[in-house]
Image 1 (cartoon, rainbow, N blue to C red):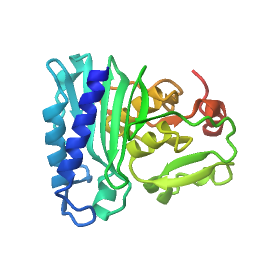
Image 2: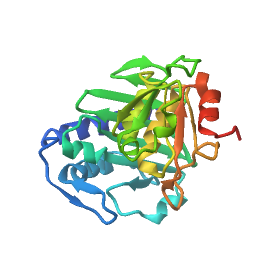
Image 3: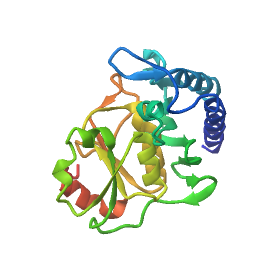
Image 4: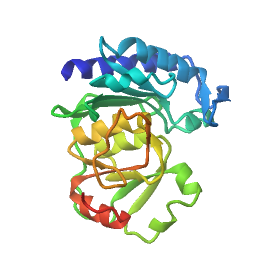
Length: 258
């Protein structure tokens, strides 16, 4: 696993160097089929990641690569988002990152994110722990939901999907990138994050690996562990939380233990 972590770090650093050629907030974009934006930066980083990460027999799933069904027969699959938070990147909002996840037998086992605007590199693997810019870190030790810092989706908040939590005893902070939110939870800089609407595997895989590696809990809106490398990469939603508040979070969301 350390070999994989080394390659993830190499890929993320090379991605950061590639992004130096682009200026967030001053870059053109086009809309893909489905309405999501894409920039030259997304495509350039995708090429860098694809050139470093997969080894013989590995599968590949990326937001910016046409899906190859052969990944479904692979035990190991790289699940990446070259720029998670492209809308924020285009708008110049510093809440985006490069996201790299490694899935084995459907489970996220290693991952990393790099947020160039804050120069945060978060790496981790199950059994190896998590580091933030090279220093060991861990999940929040919080045991009380009251005052817990929960990271919310900026777009979901705008659509009113977080209004139900206005009376909950939590502190909510809006932030763009899904992977970045998960990375901050893994690093102990927030206590939980969730989205109860569909997200793609490439949004979640790296962060799910990081939260798990840090000792946190990740589950779907059905209450069960989230599985990856599925024929349809669209997940119904997810929850990531520090273990000390898993019970209260499930109660708040109405998601029972499996």
